[in-house]
Image (cartoon, rainbow, N blue to C red):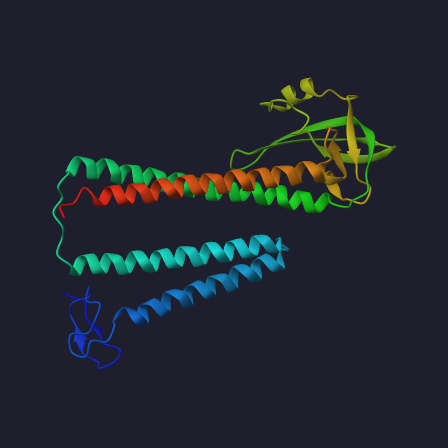
Length: 262
């Protein structure tokens, strides 16, 4: 059974769901549907903003999430209107079917690469950005961490956490061993052989921080500066990757049009 819609202006019942305009009065049919899409986007932005403010996410992360939602909504609305317009218009003749298939696959792969750059680049940037501002301005000094015991824990999703308890200035402290280890162990016994009790590790000590963040493995660059460099490097490489893949997708779309008879 065909679905029926009504014209928002004259109330005419429309059996043709692909119609962009009312055949009676000429009013646009997609106008009300488009407004619903943007209302949904505003609701998503409101919920995500409240959630991030409650859990104290960085403000830059809130802005980026809002931009992603708006971009996704605009892309969805554009694809929907284009799909309806293509359904109503006569279909063009394919002059190069093999070329069309190859170019379509290339567009799909390029789009997937762009999505991966956006997703993983965003996560890496936010991690470095957050740690940069957590350590920025915090007083610290070089010290030594003497390992008392090491811990190997495997998460429910296969993640591995390795950390240690020990002493810094006669106080019991905790630290993550990931920056210290060149490779991750596969068991508690292997971790204990790699970092036996009594091991002395040079560290940066942050007396004003809490938990494991108080102790960071010593490196040539302090944590705040190192994370700032990592965030800016990720941002620059991410923008370059987005520009390259975006330009490639645009070129492939133009190339795809050549596969149809003029």
